[in-house]
Image (tube, rainbow, N blue to C red; front, side, top):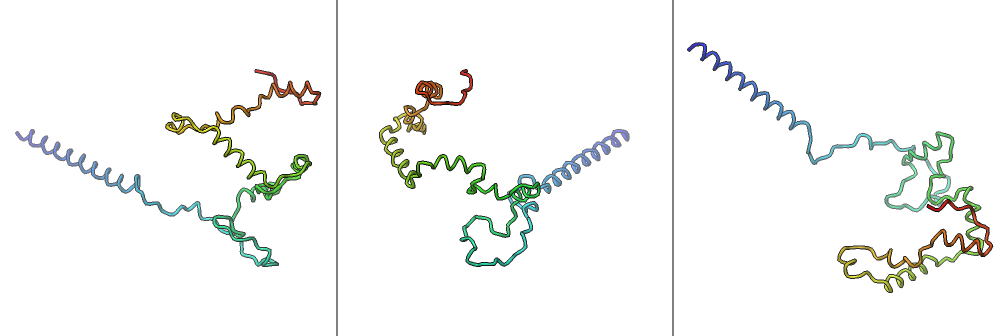
Amino acid sequence: MMLRTGNLGLIMMAKSAVILAGIAVFSLAACSGAGKSSKGPDEFAVVPTKPLTMPDDLNALPEPRPGALSRVDQEPNKDAVAALGGNGAALDGNLIRSSEQTLLRSAQRYGVDPSIRSTLATEDLKQRKDNPPRVLERLAGYSSTIRAYTKFELDADRELIRLRRLGVRTPTAPPAE
């Protein structure tokens, strides 16, 4: 009998150890933060700003725009380009590069229509009214833009042949597939 009682005591101690180990694992897992919804500070988002400087002319300061970078914000992409010997200002979307000046002059040689955007918007609205989406297209949320503008599609191969027949010098075209 003593043997059985001793075995029973060992079994009970083993079960207790397993239960305590399980409780410890679950307690540690609860402390890991997995699944928590609260976010702490992002230590990588903290970037020092450039030093404050007083501009020569206060009237030359740009108009403040919400969400835009300020003069003291870091611009890592521009800084990297400048560090590699390039011009960081070339990354600005509104800057016309010297390599694009010739193309721009060529495109503007016959003048520029300042109201082109409103003209195109009006023509687009008329085109969409003349080609409204069909019932199933509306139900499926399908855009009818493709169908409305299919007749205006340019077939590059046919246009190349047409221009060559007119005697217009054209660049070499890629082979037909």
